[in-house]
Length: 70
Image 1: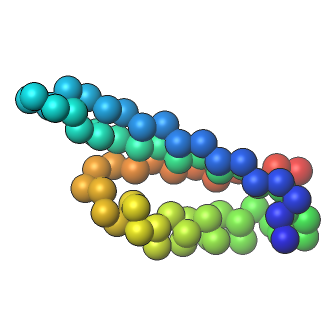
Image 2: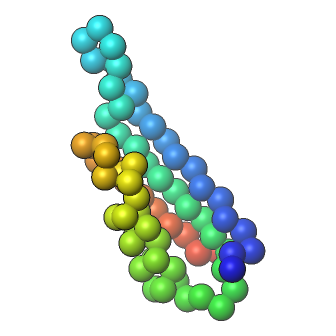
């Protein structure tokens, strides 16, 4: 179970004709989880991003980084 989990998303919105479009998203997650190594954490985090229904919905680049805090 995580002791700490912080996430941040940065969304770029650009003018598109008469309206606006989301052109990119970058997600950042920092977690403190006792008893887990970074390779396992990266595997879990990458799978979560790939299975994310919002990421699947958007036809844009979604950047991602996951950091396991010590």
